[in-house]
Amino acid sequence: MRNQAPISLLTLIETCKNLKQLKQIHSKSITTCLSYNHFILTKLINSFISLKSLNYATHIFNQIQEPTIFFYNSLIKSYSHSPHIAISMYNQMRVRQNLFGDNYTYPFVVKACASLLDLEKGREVHGVIVKIGFDGSMFLSASLLSFYCVCGQIASARQVFDDFTGKDVVFWNAMMTGYARCGMFLDACKIFKEMLKVSEVEINEGTMLGLISASTVSRNLNLGKEIHGSVLKELNFSTGVKLGAALIDMYVKCGCLDYASRVFDLMPDKNVVVWNSLICGYCQNGAVKQAIKLFREMHFAGVKPDRFTITGLLSACAQMGAINLGNWVRKFSENEGIWDAFIGTSLVDMYAKCGSIGMAREVFDQMDKKTTATWNAILHGYASNGQAEIAMELFDEMIKSGVRPDSVTFLSLLHACAHAGFVEKGEQLFDLMIKNYKITPKVEHYGCRVDLLGRAGLLKEARELIEGLDTEPNVIMWGALLSACSIHYDIGTGAWAAHHLLKLDALDTGSYVLLANLFAAAQRFDAVKLVREAMVKMGMCKQPGCSMIEIGNVVHEFFVADKANTRSDEIYFVLDELNRKLKIAGYVPLLAIDDE
Image (cartoon, rainbow, N blue to C red):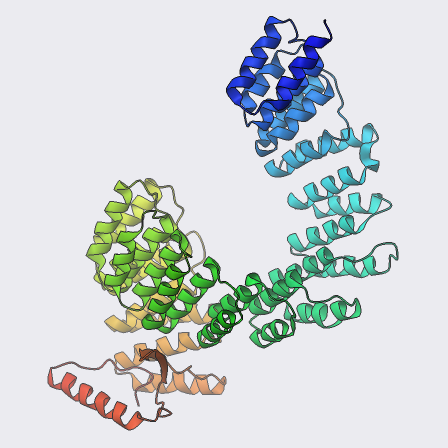
């Protein structure tokens, strides 16, 4: 009879799927004096863990007088999402019970050390692993290698790698990925070449993905071409979906859209991820017409788009100012049932960038769930459209709704204050960001603050702000100050800013244009001439400005002095009429480097 009770109890535990009933079973084990049976306790603990009741499982565990390694392993594994507790359980096992653990214990302990970036504890655990002779386990050695790579200790990772014999492809891949993660891309390639010489190791897709990732992160186009053009070809790898998407992403991030398109065209099978890689790549590189054309091809090919496709397209519409096309994308998304806060935020951003802040607000107000990014999009929209007061009111609503602002929020607000001349409000927001929300200002925030002071004519204060910074000012700050000097005709401060700006980036055309505009605004045409001559001598040329306008679902591009449009005569006639009326109204043009 004594043996029958545990069997029936075990059956109840194994079939129980309800937390309340499981607690009743536990109570039954106590009343029947079976709560000390290790087999019963093991089943109970594992069942509570599977029902996500870790606290109760730990409570049962703490009642066990002499827990075995098996008990510890169950809880250490279960607390992998809480690495501090996992390490604490391991320490308890080693100190209180004087247990060493086994092959199942240490991979989870090493993983916990990696999550905490606890190098000291990880080295201590490594020493124990060597002491008890578990360093011959490939799984454990791979865990240690990964731990050292995560902690940036690449030399220690390489030592683990070199000491282990009988490495499989996963082990080689881990070392290669470790080098890539630490930015040592040439070493990652060397590991790959060493790997090729080991006949027992067969290169797999993971190897190639690791190499492509290395070239993507490093933005090393030559390395990427070498991997694609020679390694993949020599090893006779077919360009499957994962490899194809990775190659497209690599070429896109290196700004080589022709090669990305070529990889795409040669792929026999393409899923939505592959289509998205190229569509979003076109958008990120400003090739918005190609992005829209590719989307239409995707639609005709019968591939169902997802939210990443839609947001990529909305980004393209925002760049082009193609509001009619954006409306079509919106309608398509709604008809296909593709909708979430991510897409809603992209729509708000698109309408705002197209100058339709009313439509942006309509979408914003209709959204049930608004993330910080959603609030940032509408705030930036009002700021960019010159409606700073509404942006401030919305910020107050954002705080009242319980959404916490981030660094991007304050960047939009400072931008709004700069363009509206709200100097005092801007300074208050800057202090609020630091004191109330503990957000460390980035260089962009200081650039906005310089712009805020500069536009208001407080050039002395802007200069003092730059001089008082702990870090070295960058191009954004010097450019903002130089631009403000052009507005207020301050040649002295402007020349000082230009000196520092050109020291940082002597070949930046924009810096010379700003300097020339400063001299032109102050009627110093002799200095304008010298700046132009310097630009010519260095082979610089100002990129022509470009505007886009959507008429009848067609986006037209216009460059400075462009007469390519078939109706250019009519366009220039209208422009001349506008200029004439502006002069009659008393407006005086600001002289700039483009003026002849």
